[in-house]
Amino acid sequence: MRSLYVWLSRLIALGVVVQVLVIAWSAFDIINKAGDGVPFTEDTEANAGAAIHSVVGMMIIPVLALLFGIISFFAKVRGGVALAWAVVGLVVLQIALAFASFSAPVVGILHALNAFAIAGVAGMAGSRASRSDTPVAATAGDAGVRAGA
Image 1: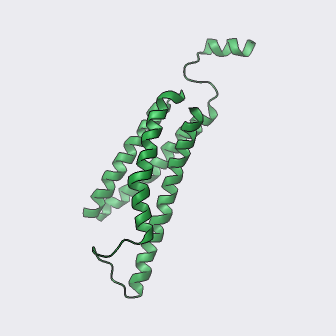
Image 2: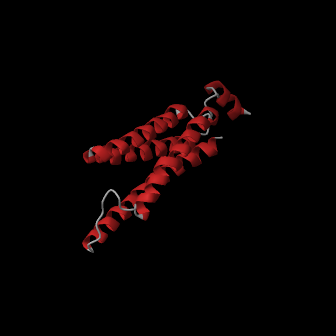
């Protein structure tokens, strides 16, 4: 379970990187098309970058985050449950910030900052799980007995 915990944390952080890449592609595609005289309005079909950003952000990362939260109960990583559920909470906040950004675009700044928080907390959780050789259930006395055995 610990290795699944680590891989989920990595996939979530990678998902954030993908989000940054595709939203940059989307923005530059809009600017490029606008420069060619193509109007971009509410009725314009979303470009590929925006479509990928929506799918990854509304479906893939939330599912990964929920799995991460559930797996955290079984992975026995010290502080792992709190970190995993912090990621879940940040993902929920990210979705709320995305919807708020449509009405108040300046909120998009918070949406971007929160994305970095998701990647950071997920990365920290995975790093902690990778470093930690001793499961939470073991005590200092148990570790001494194992070392002497």
